[in-house]
Image (cartoon, rainbow, N blue to C red; front, side, top):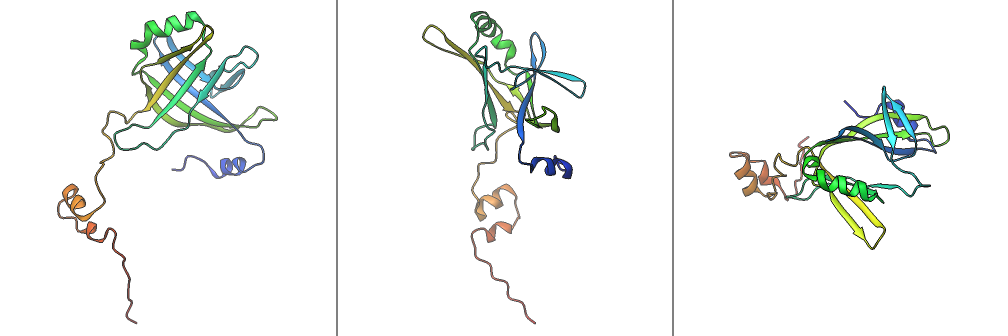
Length: 191
């Protein structure tokens, strides 16, 4: 089943499409639903609070989801800053409790002119929070970063083998399909 319907694809091909990330985070203090914009959205009966406040200097950054290399889980980094001294202290005290908790990232397209949702929420990255990292520089710069790892991070990594006949036979004994890896094949049809 495709993630996007034909109606969604039509709206996404329009001239003005704004994307918004939504995060549902299971924190020790309770479930938090936030988005990387300003204000509040109610979608599907759930309220999502904006965490970006340009006037107050609160900024949020969400990194791109990258295809992992061998030995590395897919992850997304969320940066929240600047944070207050009280927030810094709270994150530091609850870091162990935060680690391993659920964090699902959703994506939606919004019409920037009307603020209406063009494409409803799509769960794009179900994951778990790794240990939060606190950063500071000088007197007034403080921010926190949270890495959300794919739910598959503890389910082993890609096989890491080689694409050659010997490795294919080692992985799947009796499989002769690996004999054609890297070989130029020409089909000749007898008519």
